[in-house]
Image (cartoon, rainbow, N blue to C red; front, side):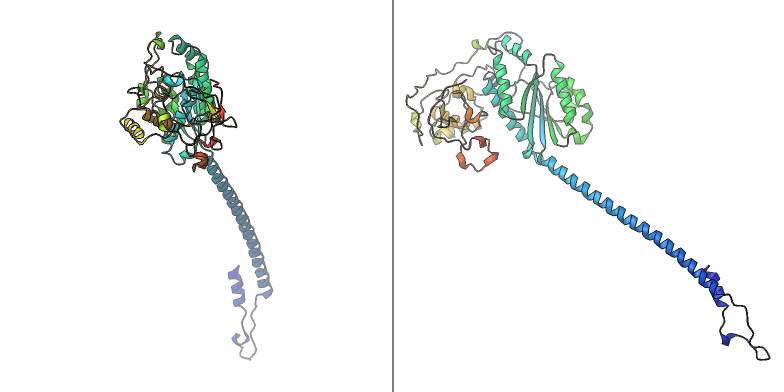
Length: 444
């Protein structure tokens, strides 16, 4: 069309360019009408305007679409960051234990509820130490679920005369469950596969949970659990999130699995329960004679200091069960250990000797296979230092504890001015008035 217009315009000549005849008159040629050129230009312009409007509309649609997708992307990124932040702040570690295969130490079981609380405390501390290696691990909540055939275990323990009554194990289980809000010792019922099925389903439920940062499994004693772990062993990301508690009888099929093996000291038995009767009362170690302390008739008053030479009671527990005016448990003041006593105690511990709290402080360890040291007996100065060291572990019952046999601490060593605040294991008793008001009744 542009060529046609150009040709038509080129035919329009100026007056000076027109040739003359011999008579001097002007010769005229036919000139294409400018009107037709104008009409063609209008058509071209109309078409261009239409194409421009179409292009502009498409451009606006693209801008609107890009803006919409940008908003969606920003919203998705915001939700992702919020989810990641929530997952980081609400992350947890799950510990699943087959309680039929992982039996807690004898000296914990025979203490009933106190032993259950102590077992939970030790397990919590061991898990916390393990997760320190992971980023953010110190902020994860810890969930523990132990599954066992309690009726079968009770019968076994009573049959071999390990405990006199089944209720001792029930008390242990109750103490374990009550000591930590996210700890549960669950009766899976009778039958070998009951606990296996529970643990398998719990693992499948949580292994892909965003908030579940790590899973610890107490199942490595039984090769029957290997197929349960097979789906995860070839996935490096998932495999790195699973750890196995090492039992004394590690199943041979677990040795080639890629999961980390973790060992917790002084928590589980190091051998199977015997199959025949073996009355513990005929195998007890000799313990020093216990002299019941004379209880004063008048209420105890707070004493800022007690001379070391006044601590003559051996063993130290059971002692007076002291409470303040609010009926909250407070610890008996044992005095300040001498430098010599502390030095001797530390030297003995550094030598690799793990002392038995129950034997040295209460004189009644009934476990013939106790892994802790009973001999030689601690001197009086060392005994006080050892008792104070044991009190650095918080009693799970806290100020409500009513056992004269409890060797754990009921007051924060740093008092209400403790700098650790909520991270302190004694944070729930920071408010307790340490001044003794009277003696309470033993409820154990």
